[in-house]
Length: 85
Image (cartoon, rainbow, N blue to C red):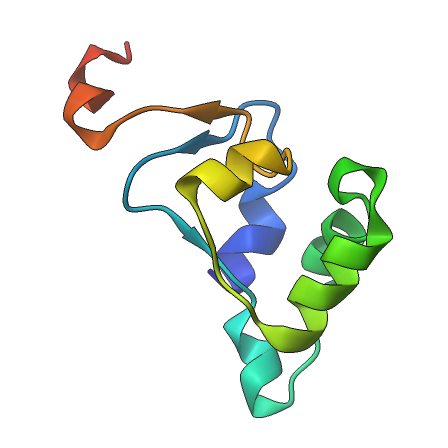
């Protein structure tokens, strides 16, 4: 969450597990999203409305939502992570 989103969101492969949570919590205390997050949020599934909503509210998305919206490229159950070599 937070600054880690701006750094990791630009990777070609983004894996979500059962425990993955995506959010921009800094907006809850009045901060703006960083340049990496702002760039990425504006391009989520070519739907700027979702990006604006996430950037302004700090709403948290969970694993399956991340794949649905293209924020994560893959979903792997946490008990299968060991097989991901």
